[in-house]
Every structure is written in structure tokens, then in C-alpha cells.
Image (tube, rainbow, N blue to C red):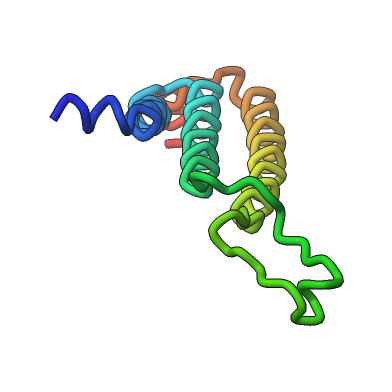
Length: 127
């Protein structure tokens, strides 16, 4: 059992990071802390997808040579790394940064209007 936990330590780290982010998003009342929790959660998911895309023994990119393209040489699939998950996570990072920027802009607007970032106080003023 302990060998399984040690062998998959990276997954445990991602789960812990996700739970920290989820906890901050649910429990904290400060809006900036909620945004930080959201960012931690998103980072954990990106790290998870990148780690699952890793391939043992994969050492080359999927670029075919002229001989392989014309059928004169075999393509060994075992040694080829799939770049798609990494490219998708780059897109996710861009979305994460954009989400962070929009969230911080909204928080600045909320602070200017209500002079607080505490969710409970904002809800009291809104009622």
C-alpha cells in the first residue's frame, strides 16, 4: 500500500493542491483569497494533465522524416511523445491568466463601490 502511495506521489500533490484551492474558494470570505484559491485549483489541474501526458521511454517528437513519409522507414510509435496535452495546457494557462485578470478587475470595482472585500459585509449592504 505504501509503495503505491510513494509511486504516485505526484497525484497526491495535485489532489492536495486541488483541495487547498477548493477550500479557499468555499470557506474564505475575502474575495482576493477566493481568487487565489481559484488560481491554485486551476494550476493543480494543469499540472495534473501535464503529468498524465508523460510517457516512459518517449524521447522524440512526432516529426516524420522524408524516408518515413514515403514509407521507406517504419515509425516507432513507442518512442514518440504526444504534444497535444501540452499544447492544450498552454491554452489553459492563457485562459487562467485572462480569468485572473477579469476577476481582479471585478474585485477592484467591488472594492471601490462597497469599500470592503469581505463577502458577508457586501451581502449585508446589498440587502
